[in-house]
Image 1 (cartoon, rainbow, N blue to C red):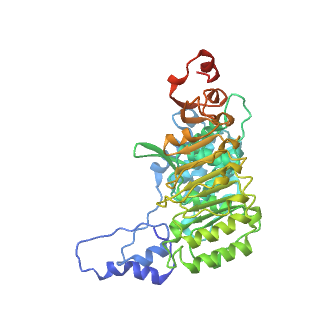
Image 2: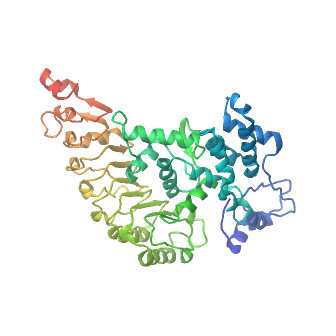
Image 3: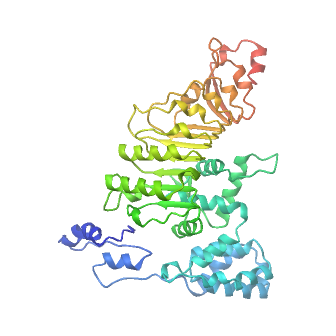
Length: 456
C-alpha cells in the first residue's frame, strides 16, 4: 500500500476510479494504516482484521513453541507461563512465530518467567498498527548476539526485497560481521548457518520464485530493524528530505529511489537531487560512512551528485549501486570490501580501470552489469578477492594471472594458453581456495608435469 501522505497526490491517483461509470467492479484495498484506508474508501464498509482468537491461536502458538514434542506440554507450570505470554501477542501469527521460537530455544521456567515480566511489553506506541512491536523487539533482544547485525543490516535493502542466499551471505562478508572460530568451516558456511538460524527464529521467510529460493523479511520486522538500527543506519525512501533526521552516529546509508520515484516530486528531479545532496553534505559525516546502497534508476545529475559524495566517503567498505549511468569518484575507496554494480542499457559505460586498486575487495558482484566489461589487466592485484560474480562465465576467462587471486573460490572459465603469459596451466595450481572451476583447452596440457602444476 502506497504510504504517501500528500492529499493532492491521493486525489490524483484516485481520480480515474472515482469518475469511472463502470458498475459491478470492486477494488479491494489492504493496508496496515487506518489513515490510508480512510483516504481511499468510497463506502463505509471498512473491515478491520483482528488477530486469531481462542483455541486456534493457542494451538498455533504452542506448535511454534513445542513443535512435535508433546511431553514438554505436560509441564503445567511451563505451559501456564507460556499461555500468559501468549495473551500479550494480540493474536498475531507473526508474533506467535517469533516469540514462540524464542521460547523453544530454552524450555526453562525461569527463562520464560523473565520474558513474561520484562518491561518491554509496556513499550507500545500509540499507533494501533504497532501493537505487536514489543513482542517482535523482545524476540530480537533475545536473539543470539552474532545474529543481530545480520538481521539489522538488512534494513539497508528496500522493504519486501527478495534476497538470494548468496547475495545475503556475500553482503554480510562485505560488512565483516561473520566470524569463524572453527578451522573446518569457511566464512561462507558460517553465513549459511546464520541464515538458517534467522529463518528458524522467524526473522526471514523462505519462499520459492521461478524455481529458485528467495528470502523475505516481513514488513513489520523491517520496521523493527529500521527502528533498532536508527543510530547507525539511515534509509531515504521519500523525496521530502527536508524532514530527515540524520544522527551523527550514522555509518550506513541507503537511498531507495524505487520508492521515492512514486512521490510527487520525482527522485530524479533537480529539486530533489539538489536538496538531498545539500542535506547529506551538511548533516552527514560522509568521511565516516561505511556503507552506501542505492536502489533504482538515476539520471546523470543524480549520478554526478552521488559521485561527489563518494569522493568524500574514503572510508566506504560496502558500495551497492543498482543502476549507474556514469561512474565517478571511485578513486578514493581504498578500504572497499564489497562492490556491487548494476547497469541498464548504456553499453558505452566501462568498469573503472582503477578497480584493481581496491586491494581489500572481497566481493565483486557484476551480475546485473550491462555495460562493457573490460577487466583491468592488473586485476590480479585484488589478492583478497573471494568471489567474482558475473552473468556470463566467459568473463572469468579474461582474468590475467588468475593464480595470484589465492582466495578466489570460483573461476568458472579458464582457457589454457601456454603461449600467453598469465594463462599458463600453473595458474590453476596456485588457486588454493578454489571450490569451483571450469578448464578449457585442456588438450594444450601435454605433460604430466604441467598437469601437476595445474593441480588436475
